[in-house]
Image (tube, rainbow, N blue to C red; front, side, top):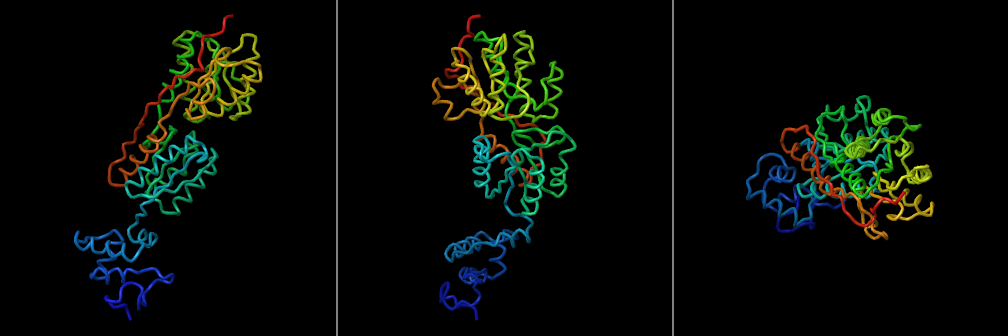
Length: 375
């Protein structure tokens, strides 16, 4: 027999769940409403008057009732969950982006599932399949795709009614809402800062993943077609600043090949060994900054006396270096928060805008830029 109302929760109840959890029937009895009313309230579907809704929710809190999310999603088609795919959740940049996404999503009643791909497209495809199987309502993706032949998995998600917003990287083959920072302008400002300090031999670390050093500017830019959008934009900003200052492009001053701290150190060492060596370096990733610093130290040089340096992705360690490093600060939390807002607006009925949402970065000037050495 069902528990009598006067017995209270847990005493004499025979319709408890197998794990002793309170059921909808018990919540309904506690609230003094029918089971259907309790089910509509707790399932988030149908109409329930405000008075009855509050009675049901109060009873659920009192009994410690928790909604079966899977059952609710099967009946409503909504899980109140968004999926996020990033390159590396261990990277402080993506950790900051994820914080922005989760803070914004939680405030609007959505949970977040996160998967890392480590820049591998096959991992991204698998992650997309996992999130579709988990019945997420929408996805935010920092994609490793660079051309039309690599976006079938994203199109498949959209075809199944799962809205997608891109974050940090644009993909030219996809007409989607995309949230990015002003990569090209940020790189241009950084290199202009070095030019204004008198530098004309400015290294760029890191560049396209080409096997060989392109001999021409056109050849270099052609390599960016197989590069991540962010890397290509930062390279263009570097070239813009050289053009503005009428500094001839020298392919020997652009790193190509493997993107790693070790290779960055090797490439900066090579640039420092040129007959007309670099006097400054612009690094487009935190690992590139570390590699450059290792090479400068290994050459018996120091910054900014011998080599000036500016990097992307400001962080606490950059501020406590001696001297402190001049860095580009990306609005990582706002990047994630904006991507979440754009996606959640669509999930709540807004039409996709299918546009580039560009946030401004900031150059944090410290002490790693000095005048170009004489001679």
